[in-house]
Length: 147
Ligand code: HNI
Image 1 (cartoon, rainbow, N blue to C red):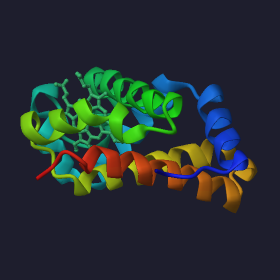
Image 2: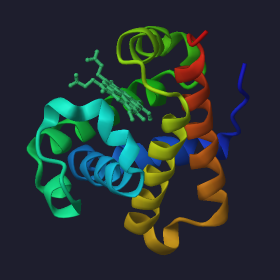
Image 3: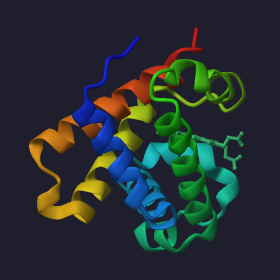
Protein backbone atom coordinates (compact mmCIF):
# COMPACT_ATOMS: atom_id res chain seq x y z
CA UNK A 1 0.00 0.00 0.00
CA UNK A 2 1.17 3.52 -0.74
CA UNK A 3 2.18 5.64 2.25
CA UNK A 4 1.25 9.32 2.16
CA UNK A 5 2.69 11.99 4.40
CA UNK A 6 0.37 14.57 5.92
CA UNK A 7 1.89 17.15 3.59
CA UNK A 8 1.22 15.01 0.53
CA UNK A 9 -2.39 14.37 1.55
CA UNK A 10 -3.04 18.02 2.31
CA UNK A 11 -1.39 19.14 -0.93
CA UNK A 12 -3.40 16.79 -3.13
CA UNK A 13 -6.68 17.68 -1.40
CA UNK A 14 -5.86 21.37 -1.67
CA UNK A 15 -4.96 21.28 -5.37
CA UNK A 16 -8.11 19.37 -6.33
CA UNK A 17 -10.45 21.33 -4.07
CA UNK A 18 -9.45 24.56 -5.82
CA UNK A 19 -9.26 23.14 -9.31
CA UNK A 20 -11.68 24.05 -12.10
CA UNK A 21 -12.18 20.57 -13.56
CA UNK A 22 -13.70 21.84 -16.78
CA UNK A 23 -10.85 24.12 -17.81
CA UNK A 24 -7.96 22.09 -16.39
CA UNK A 25 -9.32 18.87 -17.93
CA UNK A 26 -9.89 20.59 -21.26
CA UNK A 27 -6.41 22.14 -21.32
CA UNK A 28 -4.63 18.94 -20.25
CA UNK A 29 -6.37 16.75 -22.82
CA UNK A 30 -5.84 19.38 -25.53
CA UNK A 31 -2.11 19.44 -24.77
CA UNK A 32 -1.92 15.67 -24.80
CA UNK A 33 -3.58 15.44 -28.23
CA UNK A 34 -1.42 18.23 -29.68
CA UNK A 35 1.93 17.26 -28.17
CA UNK A 36 1.51 13.49 -28.62
CA UNK A 37 -0.58 13.28 -31.82
CA UNK A 38 -0.71 9.47 -31.77
CA UNK A 39 -3.06 9.72 -28.80
CA UNK A 40 -5.69 11.12 -31.22
CA UNK A 41 -6.34 7.63 -32.59
CA UNK A 42 -8.44 6.73 -29.55
CA UNK A 43 -10.72 9.70 -30.09
CA UNK A 44 -11.65 9.25 -33.75
CA UNK A 45 -15.33 9.73 -32.93
CA UNK A 46 -14.62 13.23 -31.61
CA UNK A 47 -14.46 14.52 -35.20
CA UNK A 48 -12.17 17.41 -36.14
CA UNK A 49 -8.74 17.08 -34.48
CA UNK A 50 -6.96 18.49 -37.52
CA UNK A 51 -4.66 20.96 -35.79
CA UNK A 52 -4.07 22.62 -32.41
CA UNK A 53 -6.85 25.18 -32.92
CA UNK A 54 -9.35 22.49 -33.97
CA UNK A 55 -8.43 20.35 -30.96
CA UNK A 56 -8.69 23.26 -28.53
CA UNK A 57 -12.08 24.26 -29.99
CA UNK A 58 -13.54 20.74 -30.14
CA UNK A 59 -16.42 20.46 -27.64
CA UNK A 60 -15.93 16.69 -27.26
CA UNK A 61 -12.34 17.25 -26.15
CA UNK A 62 -13.56 19.78 -23.58
CA UNK A 63 -16.25 17.42 -22.30
CA UNK A 64 -13.93 14.44 -22.11
CA UNK A 65 -11.24 16.44 -20.33
CA UNK A 66 -13.74 17.09 -17.54
CA UNK A 67 -14.66 13.36 -17.48
CA UNK A 68 -11.00 12.46 -16.92
CA UNK A 69 -10.71 15.00 -14.09
CA UNK A 70 -13.82 13.62 -12.42
CA UNK A 71 -12.15 10.22 -12.77
CA UNK A 72 -9.17 11.61 -10.88
CA UNK A 73 -11.52 12.90 -8.22
CA UNK A 74 -12.30 9.24 -7.42
CA UNK A 75 -8.60 8.71 -6.69
CA UNK A 76 -8.44 11.81 -4.49
CA UNK A 77 -11.37 10.47 -2.46
CA UNK A 78 -9.77 7.00 -2.20
CA UNK A 79 -6.11 7.85 -1.68
CA UNK A 80 -5.56 4.80 0.49
CA UNK A 81 -6.92 2.39 -2.05
CA UNK A 82 -6.53 3.82 -5.53
CA UNK A 83 -5.90 0.40 -7.08
CA UNK A 84 -9.27 -0.96 -5.95
CA UNK A 85 -11.06 2.28 -6.81
CA UNK A 86 -9.65 2.06 -10.36
CA UNK A 87 -10.09 -1.66 -11.00
CA UNK A 88 -13.06 -1.16 -13.33
CA UNK A 89 -11.56 1.86 -15.08
CA UNK A 90 -8.38 -0.13 -15.69
CA UNK A 91 -10.32 -3.02 -17.26
CA UNK A 92 -12.20 -0.51 -19.44
CA UNK A 93 -9.01 1.12 -20.76
CA UNK A 94 -7.35 -2.23 -21.29
CA UNK A 95 -10.01 -4.54 -22.64
CA UNK A 96 -12.52 -2.23 -24.25
CA UNK A 97 -10.65 0.91 -25.25
CA UNK A 98 -7.28 -0.81 -25.88
CA UNK A 99 -5.38 2.28 -24.75
CA UNK A 100 -1.62 1.73 -24.73
CA UNK A 101 -0.82 2.26 -21.02
CA UNK A 102 2.28 4.35 -21.85
CA UNK A 103 -0.19 7.09 -22.74
CA UNK A 104 -1.37 7.47 -19.12
CA UNK A 105 1.97 8.97 -18.23
CA UNK A 106 1.78 11.39 -21.15
CA UNK A 107 -1.60 12.72 -20.10
CA UNK A 108 -0.41 12.90 -16.50
CA UNK A 109 2.58 15.00 -17.59
CA UNK A 110 0.30 17.37 -19.51
CA UNK A 111 -1.86 17.69 -16.43
CA UNK A 112 1.20 18.53 -14.33
CA UNK A 113 2.11 21.31 -16.77
CA UNK A 114 -1.39 22.78 -16.67
CA UNK A 115 -1.52 22.66 -12.87
CA UNK A 116 1.97 24.17 -12.63
CA UNK A 117 1.01 27.06 -14.88
CA UNK A 118 -2.17 27.63 -12.86
CA UNK A 119 -0.43 27.60 -9.47
CA UNK A 120 2.61 29.61 -10.58
CA UNK A 121 5.01 30.17 -7.69
CA UNK A 122 2.75 28.05 -5.47
CA UNK A 123 3.89 25.02 -7.45
CA UNK A 124 7.03 24.50 -5.39
CA UNK A 125 9.32 21.49 -5.77
CA UNK A 126 7.62 19.82 -2.78
CA UNK A 127 4.17 20.43 -4.25
CA UNK A 128 5.35 19.04 -7.58
CA UNK A 129 6.76 15.96 -5.84
CA UNK A 130 3.44 15.30 -4.08
CA UNK A 131 1.41 15.89 -7.23
CA UNK A 132 3.59 13.65 -9.40
CA UNK A 133 3.61 10.93 -6.77
CA UNK A 134 -0.19 11.01 -6.82
CA UNK A 135 -0.25 10.77 -10.63
CA UNK A 136 2.30 7.93 -10.58
CA UNK A 137 0.02 5.98 -8.23
CA UNK A 138 -2.95 6.75 -10.48
CA UNK A 139 -1.19 5.57 -13.63
CA UNK A 140 0.06 2.41 -11.89
CA UNK A 141 -3.53 1.67 -10.82
CA UNK A 142 -4.79 2.22 -14.37
CA UNK A 143 -2.15 -0.23 -15.63
CA UNK A 144 -3.00 -2.83 -13.01
CA UNK A 145 -5.58 -4.83 -15.00
CA UNK A 146 -3.45 -5.01 -18.19
CA UNK A 147 -2.06 -8.43 -18.98
NI1 HNI B 1 -9.53 7.63 -20.23
C1 HNI B 1 -12.86 7.09 -20.95
C2 HNI B 1 -10.34 8.39 -16.96
C3 HNI B 1 -6.24 8.37 -19.54
C4 HNI B 1 -8.75 7.24 -23.56
N1 HNI B 1 -11.25 7.72 -19.17
C5 HNI B 1 -12.52 7.45 -19.65
C6 HNI B 1 -13.48 7.63 -18.57
C7 HNI B 1 -12.77 8.01 -17.46
C8 HNI B 1 -11.37 8.06 -17.84
C9 HNI B 1 -13.32 8.32 -16.07
C10 HNI B 1 -14.98 7.42 -18.67
C11 HNI B 1 -15.25 5.97 -18.30
C12 HNI B 1 -16.68 5.54 -18.44
O1 HNI B 1 -17.37 6.03 -19.35
O2 HNI B 1 -17.10 4.69 -17.65
N2 HNI B 1 -8.48 8.23 -18.56
C13 HNI B 1 -9.00 8.46 -17.32
C14 HNI B 1 -7.93 8.83 -16.41
C15 HNI B 1 -6.77 8.82 -17.15
C16 HNI B 1 -7.14 8.45 -18.50
C17 HNI B 1 -8.11 9.15 -14.94
C18 HNI B 1 -5.36 9.13 -16.74
C19 HNI B 1 -4.99 10.10 -16.00
N3 HNI B 1 -7.81 7.74 -21.33
C20 HNI B 1 -6.58 8.09 -20.87
C21 HNI B 1 -5.63 8.14 -21.96
C22 HNI B 1 -6.33 7.81 -23.11
C23 HNI B 1 -7.70 7.57 -22.70
C24 HNI B 1 -4.15 8.50 -21.82
C25 HNI B 1 -5.86 7.71 -24.53
C26 HNI B 1 -4.79 8.28 -25.02
N4 HNI B 1 -10.60 7.22 -21.94
C27 HNI B 1 -10.07 7.12 -23.21
C28 HNI B 1 -11.14 6.88 -24.16
C29 HNI B 1 -12.33 6.84 -23.40
C30 HNI B 1 -11.95 7.05 -22.01
C31 HNI B 1 -10.98 6.69 -25.66
C32 HNI B 1 -13.75 6.62 -23.93
C33 HNI B 1 -14.24 7.96 -24.47
C34 HNI B 1 -15.65 7.91 -24.97
O3 HNI B 1 -16.30 8.97 -24.95
O4 HNI B 1 -16.11 6.86 -25.39
